[in-house]
Length: 156
Image 1 (cartoon, helix red, strand yellow):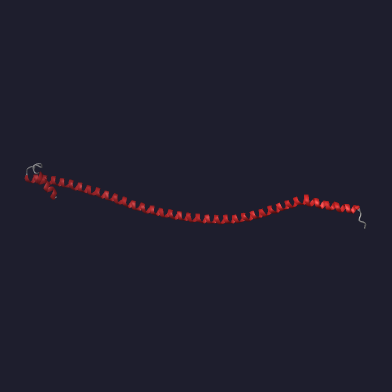
Image 2 (cartoon, rainbow, N blue to C red):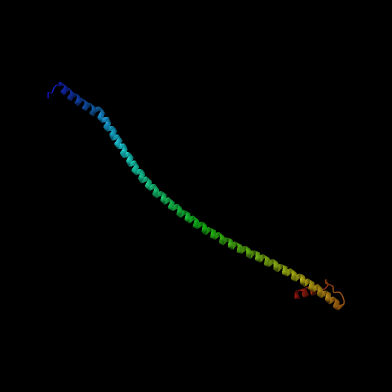
């Protein structure tokens, strides 16, 4: 095989082509690949961070739900306690009101009994005076014998 100028020219052209590709074509391709590689690595790291953040958020949400359930339970228990306290207070107030009404009614009954006794005493004294007047045959002056009548009323 003869090495001639064509083979030598093709070798030189091939070397220039390789140099040109390495200088102007290969560098941007490698830079693009490196950038893409970095972008993919960053995306994977972000996905991993997102996954970790999601796990933390899920744990935090579970914690918040647990706290909310505890607070709700405490609020319900407090409400039930307050309701029972209100019922007890209402019972106490109702008993006090009942006692007050009973005392008022008893006082009113006592007052009515006293009035009835006084009225009965007055009527008895009038009947006694009328009876005494008939027995004596003359009329007794109620004004003149007021002291005697008062004494009689208190004795009755």
